[in-house]
Image (cartoon, rainbow, N blue to C red; front, top):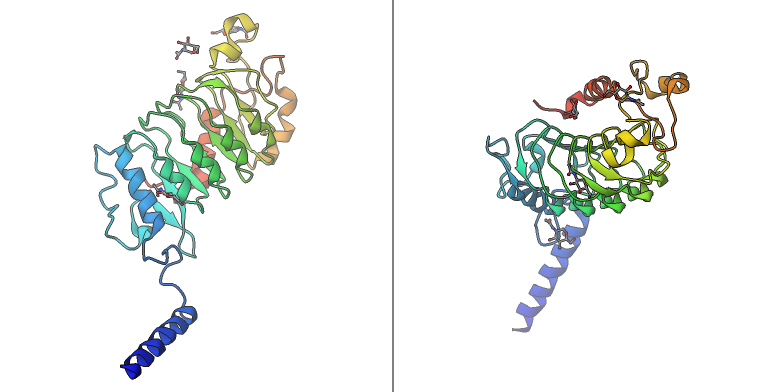
Length: 267
Ligand SMILES: *[C@@H]1O[C@H](CO)[C@@H](O)[C@H](O)[C@H]1NC(C)=O
Ligand SMILES: *[C@@H]1O[C@H](CO)[C@@H](O)[C@H](O)[C@H]1NC(C)=O
Ligand SMILES: *[C@@H]1O[C@H](CO)[C@@H](O)[C@H](O)[C@H]1NC(C)=O
Ligand SMILES: *[C@@H]1O[C@H](CO)[C@@H](O)[C@H](O)[C@H]1NC(C)=O
């Protein structure tokens, strides 16, 4: 009896040492063997309506989400990009996205996603690109987006977002492009430091009565790298209601931006 107990103690101790020495099978496995990134991705799949089965190979029993369609992982095995533009997805975006904490890029533009932008997105501290333009999003822009200190590109244009623009957006440095055009947002407009910023097509900010309908300001075609913009800012028209506006360049920048992130965009 006593030998048995002693043997068991050694076995447990040896296993403990082995576990400590061996690298974990996957960076994202919890101590109980659950890949929490798989759980979060499945929550996203569940809340989206995927009429064209583009998410078919997102499978709860699959150990490695890095092989899933439109999921990109970093070299250390964390989900770093979700590229689902133009996939005719509807439904809602799950707050579970906030658990994919290593995400750098989220491309969900040109779908039919409704509901609100989950405030948990503010937990994605490494996020550089958030494009949810051209969907059916409602509600306000979460204040938590101001926590995304690495954000470069924010495109929420062509939705039905309403409410006051969060002041927190002014605290993000290093924004290259913020496009909030064609929503139902209201002012005051925070001093967003993006090199390129559009708020056109928000009737309460740029209404007919504001003296500037925000759709007539034009810049020379945008050229990237964004530093080139510095040479064109003198053409930017300023008015009390609208800061730095451009209206005819959305297409150009999207193209460039897509080209830049082409590897993340799976058609
Ligand atoms: C996200 O993580 C929290 C705790 O870290 C957990 O309670 C929750 O169930 C997770 N949600 C999803 C959808 O993964
Ligand atoms: C956004 O809406 C405007 C006005 O309806 C339209 O001209 C523009 O093409 C739309 N942009 C996108 C990317 O859908
Ligand atoms: C915009 O918001 C105002 C006030 O919140 C509301 O009355 C109006 O119906 C909204 N317009 C659209 C097109 O959603
Ligand atoms: C407002 O937009 C119209 C076109 O819809 C344009 O003709 C007009 O010049 C613009 N007004 C101002 C003040 O920019």
